[in-house]
Length: 114
Length: 115
Image (tube, rainbow over all chains, first blue to last red; front, side, top):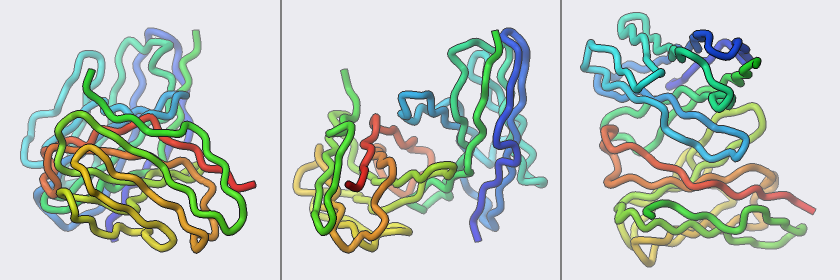
């Protein structure tokens, strides 16, 4: 079965600190993409960052970076210099090349403490 | 501004009633999707459409129907056969389908509640 596991239902961090959200996934495919989406209180899903599985270099987008460990099927998200606007649900997801759907984890609620 | 719009923001359904959720995009995307989100869970795919006049069932299509008569529009009907319709519904689109490099972009969602 294709699954995504986010083992931390909730996380909290002090403003300006760094936090890492965990994600593991299970697929037998070799060609796929991994994503982190953010869902703020407005509930719109916003793409944060994505990683192509065939690329060894970890993706970065400003304060957001990933640690992609393909053999371990691990895809964690690091948020540096946390800001109040980062407070949201964060969903890890993957999509197999040729498939239609994104497979989502259950999400991690991130709270930023001022 | 290009984007995806969904309406209404909140929708109430009475017992035995069919209701339709609207999704419109002006991104010129070929592919469109409907996902359902239940509390404490991630999203699950209901239906997707790769091109006008074509659509396919996702993982949880029972009790739902769709149409794709225009490239810009992909409405979802929640029928009376859907016994547990209370959820948050998200529409998404991508340039093409089946290519994971084509990121799916999401609309703001519709919250459906049963009276």
